[in-house]
Image (cartoon, rainbow, N blue to C red):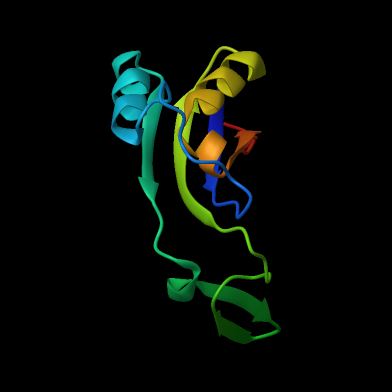
Length: 113
């Protein structure tokens, strides 16, 4: 099953522990096991554009949809057997300590094909 990992900042996060993986080590491990489809960092929220459509108008707003101290800093799409395995992969991510990692299963769109 595919899972999206939202990599988020957290002002209350901790510094890395000596035995924590670096991001490069985490990516190499998960890629090496064939469990990561892709992922990347995201530009800061100042670079975001929020899009809404109201009637025939497209309304653009600079910045994120909601005011929050936490930010989505990146993402990874992984393949895992189940939620437990996805959580274990997320828990090893460096941002699980320094920030937070939201694990969310994909909900495939049923197109009737």
